[in-house]
Structures are given as C-alpha cells and as structure tokens.
Image (cartoon, rainbow, N blue to C red):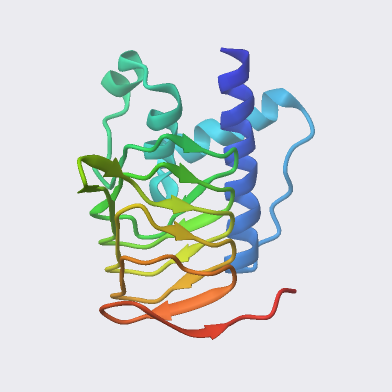
Length: 181
C-alpha cells in the first residue's frame, strides 16, 4: 500500500506541475507527507481533469468507488503507466487501451487509443514520455509514439511517430519535427 501511495503522490505532483505550466499557476508542492496526501485527495474529490480516473486505475478499490462514483470520463486499460503519467484535459469520452504510457502524457477529449489484432496477435500502442494527444484522435495498433510528439486534432495514427514529431490528418502524416529544448 505504501508503494501505491507513493505513486499516487507522484501522479498528483506531476499533475500540479503540469497545471502550473499550462495555466500559469504558481502552486507549490507541500513538503510534508500529510499535506501532500490532503492535496492529492482534494484533486481526487474534485475530479480535476480525470485525475479520479487515474486513481481508480492505480488503486482499484471497490470501497472508494462506493463513496466517490467513477466519472466515466476516461476508460483506462493500460499495461503500465509511468509515475506522473497521464494528464487529462476535458477528458470526456476518452478510451485508452495501450501497452505503455510514459510520464507527462496529455490527453484531450474524444480520444481513442486502441488495439488491433494482426496475424492473431493483439497489438497495442506505446506512448513514450511527454506525448501530447489532441481532441478526436484515434491511435490504433502496435505503433510507437516517440517522446515529445504532438498528435494534432482529428488525426488517425496507424504508423509509428518519431520523437518530437508533429502529425496531423487522416491518415496521419508527419508535418514537422520540433527541435528539442
């Protein structure tokens, strides 16, 4: 249980840092564990941007689900989510069925990340660190989305995306490679 709590606090810290960056906020991560737990619970209770769904994925306790109903904003069926993993913005109708999601990935609404069966083998997408997925995106099959990639709104991705790549369209095509900062 201690490991799960540590992971949940890491997720909450990553969530807070990301919100600070995106919205220009200046919240500080508390130094005491007690205040960190209180902050994480506040995020969970108010369900900011799908954080409750990430907690359900991490913990999966039925007793919590009776007190705080699932939001049905997101459906997560992921092999592994790195600590500090998912950030959801307007996460309504977001379905994520992936093999791996790296730290700091951001998802928008109406996104479907799903599997595909090819030659009798189930293939699921793999998203590296700090991938931004826009609204109405479909990523399907055993593709790898490179770190710091940007998937534009409405893209349908069925092939690998290079690191720092920007893809748009149906079918998705690379229009640009961002320079690493």
